[in-house]
Image (cartoon, rainbow, N blue to C red; front, side, top):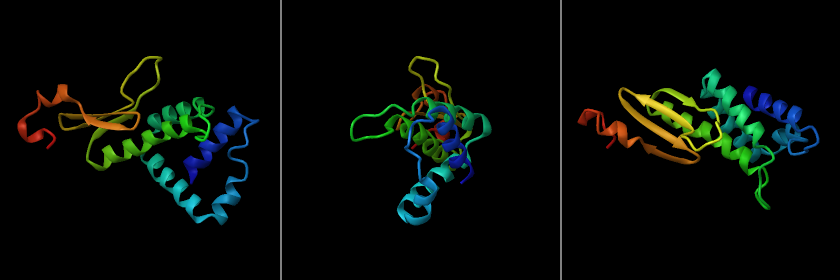
Length: 143
């Protein structure tokens, strides 16, 4: 779990007083359900291209302390969920998929391209980009 461990190291360096990942190695050894969840994140993170990985890692670390009562580290995991969206697009055959940097305004979080079709992911929603559909040949449009 190379990228998960790299992410945990980055979080620990940025937030040294936070104990969220204290004992994670032991948990992964003794808790099969926790290990499966971390492995799912690792599989998704391993699909990211190097630039998208760097962007996603920075966003996850920046949002590590964003949470609500009862939903610890929600902002952190919301960022990591973009890796699942990225993985989904790549598996669907989209090319040039990227996680976008935050620029302080609302924008699409991940873009993907398959032939001349585009899909966009923002947060946890996935939808085709309608502006590309009208210009695409009928055979290339999402069904």
